[in-house]
Image 1 (cartoon, protein in one colour):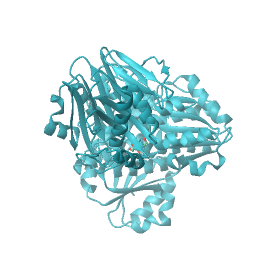
Image 2 (cartoon, protein in one colour; image 1 turned 60 degrees about the vertical axis):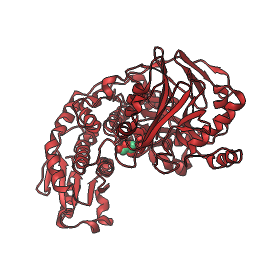
Image 3 (spheres, rainbow, N blue to C red; image 1 turned 120 degrees about the vertical axis):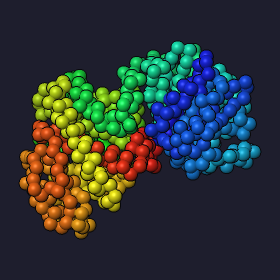
Image 4 (cartoon, rainbow, N blue to C red; image 1 turned 90 degrees about the vertical axis):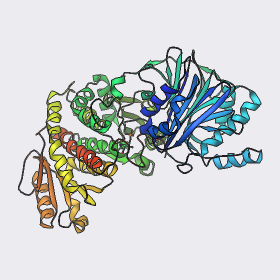
Length: 588
Ligand code: F6R
């Protein structure tokens, strides 16, 4: 959940690092810091706060040195303090480390190190790594061997970048169960948690595998496996461009990404037929079928499950990734797991697929980040093609997931998948026109303590998504549920003026949802209808275009995303960086 960026070059790197740091800030924004080596001295500047605040106070961009590394933190071990911010150094300032992950045995390692005279300045597990590497380095005098031996002592997950004060020519990186990517530039090499950190400098990347160690100099990279043997790996080219990581004219990434969706639904639908067919074949052949994901991606998974069960008559279980192993009674040889993940690095998802593979299941994934751990560990994968999603809240990745899942279900149903969807794109453009109405809604309701979202059938996961989005961006308590469940408890919470959003496209469950709306209104709720058909029961009504039933979640989620966004802005929250959250949840 932290962001790492490191660079070895011919010219000073602080500016490049600061730029990279801002781009990976979505991964954690409790604190940040930078280390460089210049004139034989290792310098660290760090502190609590957002990157811009720390830059303001500590002037990281003024640091000298042609080698450096930087970090944005999302605290796991140790409070959010200046001392706990990364980089961390060993006793003699010989070694500096930045780290993403959790060292599970850090307590035990720390005890041993303390008994050998090491003194600690922070409460973090990361500082322990610096001291372990230092011990190994004093023994071997070899940065690669020292890092390799040190990582063998670590239990848990890590992506680390390591610098050695007396070796300003090189940086070492290592990973296990957390992403670390090498960027191969011209006389400029990068190490980062995400390719976004170095886009614009190079599009040539090497995705490190678990337990590999890489040594970077300005001229190249050497990679070794856990046995110390050299690994040959050619760089691959990433398709993302610099313009993908700018906010353009939008106030926030989240708003930009919401507004990109007319294009998202088109690019997500451009898939190789063979890949779609491979998914469909696997689903048809599966003895048991599970769909797994976390958060918003799980909601997209629920939609796929619904269509598979109802239309294709294929039994699929959807289980949140963090719980999959508790529901694995029917997982085994012949099973198929479909995993959804924007980042492809969510620890719960990676753990779930690892367990599933151990039991003999095949894994097919739907991911946005090409080269991500999930994509690489799957038996087959499809990409969302929606470009980088920087805002912490998932928006365009959700609509892309729904598009891709629909292609797969259509193929299971025997239909040919269509490349591009003009009709859907136009409908999304139309749906985005509700922005003004949503702002009015926010003006009226932004101070309400609770919000409810209800729907039936295929729309129910969208109700869950609406509630999740509102909670995480506005910090208003929100619940989403099947409208049929209201009378089994939640109606007791409805008072005069309680806002309840009813998602109600015409078709299948329309009449039943209108009845629920009436029940809510009778108990004083302010019913907010989102539908292609108005009705008197709605106190406020947002019209979305009529689309094919499989696309209704896409047009309905747009006003919900805008609601969450505008509520966040109205309540003076930063919608791109909601408190306590990070975009890639790479810890369990
Ligand atoms: C919500 C949100 C999260 C993610 C979840 C899974 O807006 O962004 O709930 O959907 O953390 O992330 P990925 O899709 O990267 O596995």
